[in-house]
Length: 386
Image 1 (cartoon, rainbow, N blue to C red):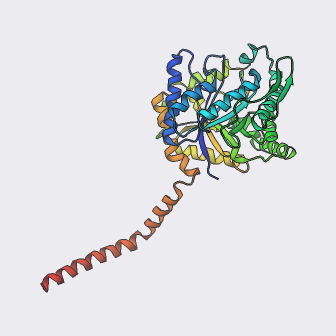
Image 2: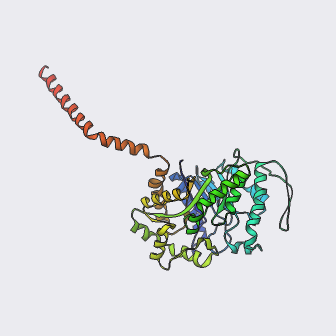
């Protein structure tokens, strides 16, 4: 199975940085990933807490689509409880047409309680609303049947899509999952994919195989098929030529990222530990991810493949801004040059050809020398008879 690669861009920026320039850097990074041959990029939706500054993944994707050629672009995720599901479906179908099928729809309950609080939503309401609205979105996307729905928060009367999707039969749909089984259950019900956020944190590693079992069971109950190609794992990487260089690179911004999850974002599933840079780097390299070399990245992905108990379709690096823009771009380039080919079969034939040539070199080199010597002898003989 050819593994796909991409990025999950929340994004994370220091609140004191110029937000206009930060957003421009995000777009520039997506252009870079497109050039490097990455398959996917997922863009987040957040409205508070200062660091994750993209409020509308759909608008950002429209801008990114105009600057890229091949990479697929997904909402990572639309927080469905915040939105009218009819308009959510309408926007994603419009993007499907504008991108000529490069769009992907990722949905979730919403990660930041500070976002939900501004809408008067309690954390306990988020997952039930996600399930209700997901049913509406999928009915709109996959049928022509009108939707009628009424609750305290929303009324739909004979609702239909204005445009049908460009993608045939439909673009990729994925549901976010961290610790609870709700994401895996929804994915199974609709035959969607799973975005395993925080797949490498302790709680995520423990439930990886369990989530897949849940998805398979629920899919079978609803006449769907759980497809490992649609399973995407999100992890943490920063690569350099040496582990020492990688460590120096992340001194730029890793402290802010850790402090965000330790002190600001009320997102306990992403609990991280570390009081100084040495402890933070050790915590990441203790299983959370890789701050180091491409060889370490390869080993991490191989471990995840084993942990998943059967494989997955894509590995997404979390776009974290630990390093400056130049070092970040180099990290992705090293990943594309050295890590991706190991899981995509693009270098196995070349390595095989090099190995065979090396093994046959002594014999063939000797034959070459003999052939040259014979040619020289023939020339001398020809001269003697001229």
